[in-house]
Length: 354
Image (cartoon, rainbow, N blue to C red; front, top):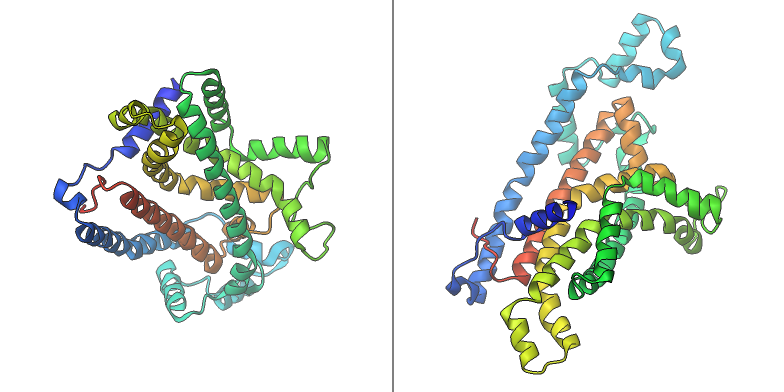
């Protein structure tokens, strides 16, 4: 039943756009113009979406029951007089309406002044410079590993559709798909760090030592593997389904009838036609990659943006939280656009004119 739902979702994503006309498919210049027009239309939505997300965030924070002064003052909150609290709130700008605070934040973003983070006591730009590269490293390596495994195992399973290996791979994907990333993280720590002692539990280096390439690779092995494993099922099943369908196409039967070796048929005919659905599903799953990276970072104490998101949300540190939220939204929007462009380049049948 789960396999049927997965296959239906993959087919729906793959067939979401109708085919273009024959003339448009065979005119490279018209095709390029169509892709550029699609990029322009999609980019027009970026600013309104980011404005809506950031504005909604400030409005929601204004009605939140959490008092940012509690986080700012800590244990001193109960001993601070109301007059002093009011003075501190005025100094921090917490007494202003949310739309005024939001407008000041927007002005700062466009002038390059991202403001100060109350949670970390340093400029937002410094917090981002310290943490974003580590998140990009973790997410980038994890996604590359997941995509590689999905292509290799998906092609193997699709070619042997219905066989023992295919059933085993599909069952494993369905099992992993039902486990949240934090459960996979805890299981990996229990087995490989605490049980076998092969890899470190968490952090970036050992005992506060300066990071080196070797120590970073050792500490990154578990979180990258967990992140890749959490993203693998959908990608692998997409490739498997596409390869399995391509095996029954007329052009494959014709290639086999002409005596072309099966390995060449797979490499030159089946795999290329399976890339477009794979890239499409990859773009659809980008939001889950972001969420999975945040959860994995928290469990493994990875020094990325996850800790900053949690801390800024708890403290209502809007200067940092708003930028992280908008940055995450931008990453998903741009990533989805790049996936759609890749699909349009790989498959000339995909419609680009809206």
